[in-house]
Structure formats: structure tokens, C-alpha cells
View 1 (spheres, rainbow, N blue to C red):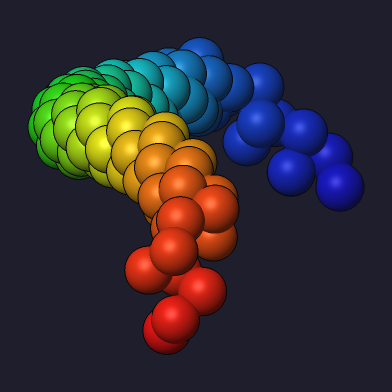
View 2: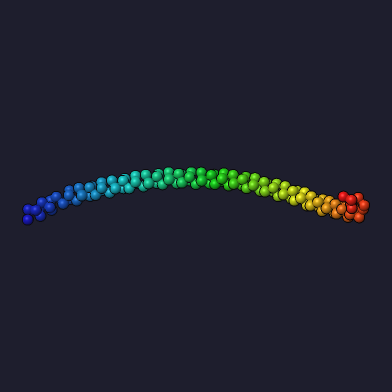
Length: 125
């Protein structure tokens, strides 16, 4: 035991230096590793952010395109509805005019029938 203490007293400085150098080497290696890890991590984060931005831009462009298509379809449907309403109004006006003409013709027919009923020709037939 005393030999071990003498040996330890004699070699404690070189052992401490070796341990210090080993510790510094390990700390340096860990620092280099963590630095490289952080660099790679930030590089991947940047690439993912670019990909997300590209995806968001593409989605926005698609949405704008689809909205424009939908607006064109809606405008075409509105124009068709407007044209159909105008055509329906025209047909309704024509039907009303035909109804008035029918009413007028019926009145004329009734008047002619009354005239014929009162005349001699109407009694013979």
C-alpha cells in the first residue's frame, strides 16, 4: 500500500495531465459532433422550410386557378339563367298576347253568332 502511495505521489502530475488531455480531447470531439449535428439539422430545417413554402405556393396557385374556373362557370350559369329568364318573359308575353287575341276572337265569334241568330239565315241553317 505504501508502494502504491509512493508511486501515486511520483506519477500524479503525469496522470493528471493525461486525464486533462483525454478530457479536452473528448470535449473537443463532442463539440465538433454537436456542431456538425446542428449544422446538418439547420440544413434539413431549411430544406423542409423551402419544401413547405413550395407546397404552400403550389396549393395557393391551384386554389386561385380553381376559383377562377368556378367563377367562370358561375358567370356562364348566370348568363344562361339570365338568357332563359328573358326567353321565358318573351314566351310569357307571347302567351299573354295569344290569350288576349283568343279572348278577342271569342268575343267576335259570339257577336257573329248573335248576329246570325237574329237573322233569317241563322234560322234556316
